[in-house]
Amino acid sequence: MSTAECPDCRLPMRDVSARARTGYLLALDQCERCGGVWFDRWELFPLHHAEVERLDPVDGKRLHQPAESGALGNCPRCDVGMREFRDANLPDDARIGRCHVCEGMWLQSGQLRIVKREAVRSTPLPSKPEDAIVVELAKAYADDAKWSNVEQLDAATYETEEPPPDFSTIGDALKSTVPWIALQVLFRMLLRR
Image (tube, rainbow, N blue to C red):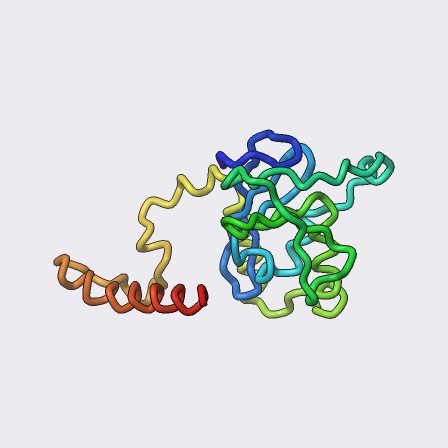
């Protein structure tokens, strides 16, 4: 269970997984009461448009209720006040709260649908069999109970035709991970400029 609290309801949010356009799964936080979704830095934009229906369904009861007060609340990670986020690439009517510390984004119920509506109109649903497999995996692993059934993580993450790398010594493991870590550090330094 996630320890993040909903900025609106101040209740613990639940962990949900969602498919990214690249095929990876994103780990998001969603309030069960109000339906708002928290996106950590860099998680909103790669979200696949087909996930909107599942994460931000139309709620008929909520449509007939008065609008929320308009306060953005505090960041569920940093507990500092969020600011309204505007971007030329997003619809003008999208209302997004953004933390200026961790750069996470809060979308109240209905806002994800607004942000992703252009993508939903212009992009067809998955047609390749590989896309259908990714959708099924996302659904299967959305339930926290499924994760405890993975007995051997290496076997689950590598294809059966190619065995996982054998790191019999610490030196072998460092030879393969040090260049990757150096590349990540370099990339992060470039992004902060």
